[in-house]
Image (cartoon, rainbow, N blue to C red; front, side):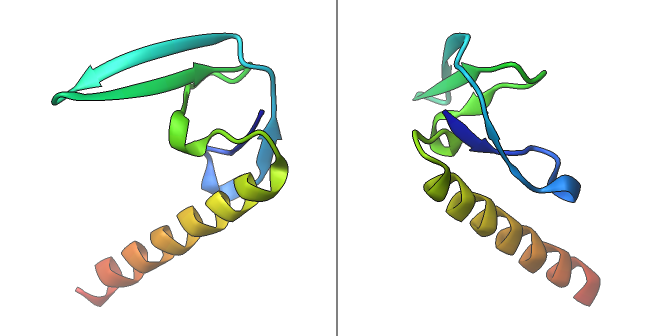
Length: 75
């Protein structure tokens, strides 16, 4: 499975095997968290079977962070 890194300063896509699955229920919404070799879980929306969609997701995350930083600096 492929997923974007949590540390956006070293933005890259990881490839790893799923070692566990956690099912959460927050505010009535069910979510799935995958455990991999990293020290953090990866949400269902960030986990992909191939690298290409994981790269697209990483780019989308970086663009969203860039907009948020711009808004904060404008204040």
